[in-house]
Image 1 (cartoon, rainbow, N blue to C red):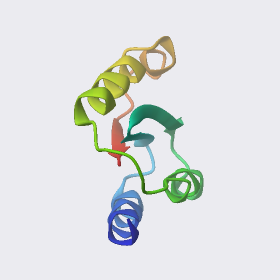
Image 2 (tube, rainbow, N blue to C red):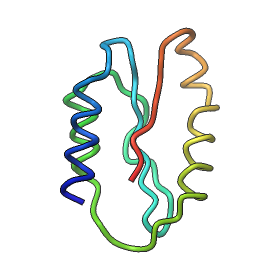
Image 3 (cartoon, one colour):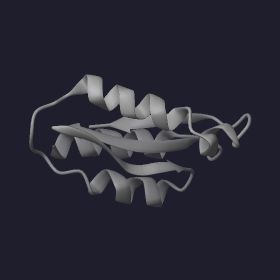
Image 4 (tube, one colour):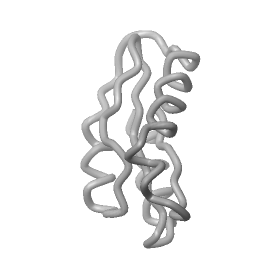
Length: 87
């Protein structure tokens, strides 16, 4: 988990200021840790909330991410870029 968080934090550091990221965990159940944000500091706080445990259910994680991506909150952002941090 340490290496995964390090990689996600480096990915966050590399994002452009206009890009937004959301953190979705899917160890056992898929949960949204943080909705779309631009602030690198806030995104990193979300990343650091992730704990190891449970089984890795990629299917549930992707379904949760797709649902989040299609919500009105994202749609209202118009032409802004968005991505996900998964664990």
